[in-house]
Length: 223
Image (cartoon, rainbow, N blue to C red):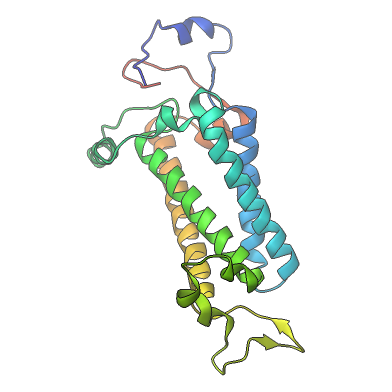
């Protein structure tokens, strides 16, 4: 991470459009595909199980892709570029409260932590959903049976309903639903942070995630 000020290479390279490419196409496709997949999974949770599971697998695949892309992708997609320590994140949050946070061309420290939290929560939600789909999958995890074995039993001790169809409930379902609800909270905080940064820095960050472009760094900005 370096400070890029007026007259830098980025400014010189963008004399016509005045824009800098920050988000590569795969990052943008990932972002909006994840929004759609999670929305479908949430809306179909109690209605269409097949579609819910399909959306869940899509979420898992997208998260897996983003983790890989965080190591081999473009400059601003890489975790090494934007992930900072707790100290830097807390300092940035303090700057936000004081109204003096600096503009980052890529993810700011708070946005970086939110990205990691979203990926971890989505991974946990997808994983618990995958475990719930088939009871045999829990047995594959040697350290978990005593913790989640009651998941496969209903309150009256039955594992099956509706003529033998398996229905997961209990602790594992509670964990799955809690993670899904946490995801909604994190998503709301994420949207709020994007809106705040857009207003503070006079830049439409939603549009930037569509086009991939942002305005070049100015004095005091970090890229």
